[in-house]
Amino acid sequence: MAAWRTLGSLLIAMFLAGAGRAQPYVLTETVQARDCFRIHIDMALAGEMRVAREGKVVPIKLTATASHVFPERILKVAATGLPEKSARFYEIAKADILAGNDRSERSLRAERRLFVAQRAKDQPLTYSPAGPLSREEMELTSEHFDTLALTGLLPVKPVAVGDTWTVPNSVAQALCGYEGLTEQTLACKLEAVSENTARIAVAGTANGIELGALVKTTITATARFDLQAHRLAGLTWKQKDERDQGPASPASTTESTTTLSRTPADTPETLSDVKLVSIPDSFEPPMAMTQLVHRDPKSRYDLMYARVWQVVGQTDAHLIMRLMERGEFVAQVTITPWTPAEKGKHLSPEEFRDAMNGTPSWEATKELQAGEVPAESGRWIYRISALGTMDGLDVMQNFYLVAGPSGEQAVLAFTLAPKQADRLGTRDLSLVGSLEFPPVEKRN
Image 1 (tube, rainbow, N blue to C red):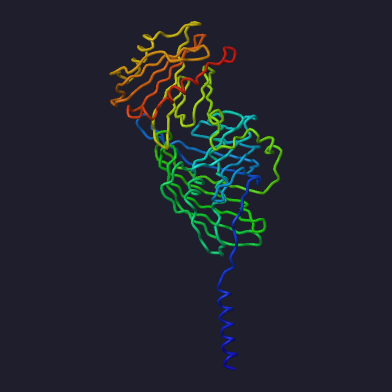
Image 2: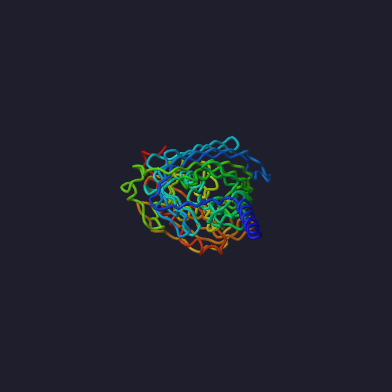
């Protein structure tokens, strides 16, 4: 009897111990090359940005909505198990942005719907193999939720209801949209399981750098995992950003909600092997695929430029861009359409020098270089490089006059700290060389 009582006690203890352990669930997803998903993303944002005007900080109300619908075919998977390169065909890509009273509507040209999305060394890149994008097209397709990092929210081992796990730094950086991550506390928790769906909560904070500005982010999100399909099926991602003033962006406070649905799909014709033949195997695509194109609103000039140049101001009189490299400000360029000359003529070097020396707040102290620059397409380019002061600061300026065969003229003025000359390198020459004047019949 004693033996039976002992055995009975052991059985009861084993039963109670088993009852105390929650059922574990496997929430991993194996993504492979050639997998295809149908993605639907909607975003709504509200907040304000703060800009300096006449010595005062002025708040400007900001609202935005965006919608993206596309099939996404996985091309390569990293050793971490996350996709690192995919092809997308945007069936819908649109955004409506209202800043104060200024409205901007963005969409894609029909010939720019096939895209490559990739992440190499924690840096994202989207581009179209069909050719250069406008900045608006680039921002429209690169700044929505990063689907390549989405499955990085899932745990690497079985978890029970109530269990938590941390989000890897690389995934937090990608999903928060940072160029660089300084710290983060994002964590996931399996909240509940109902039938074939597991609900995962995501919460925490992150700090990072984007366009040279510090951004502080707070996240509250919920993900849905399909236990039967072993796929992450959907996500609602709420994000609050506090952004400091940066060299290429204003200070702002925004809150956004992104809803995402994701379902396995057969590969559509738009992403067939034949349609993807133009996509490079390398993670370093040709420059022609990654450059951006700017067309002057009045058709006075066209410009091809690298993405490190950020547009920070535009009026009828000029375009201002800043060269940002790894979050640091390197140089600024102001592009000004100049008064046209007679056909076949342009400003003389002396007239150009006098005009540049008359730039407000600029006082040249030493001319470093002056002379013609080799040019193509019938253009004439003249450069003056000088040291001086501007608004009390020691700066270096490289002035370029670009003249066309029909008397068109444009001036590009590069301003930088003298110590940044080596970092600028020849990128001013590349930008100047890309400026073209449209044929007369295509001008407004």
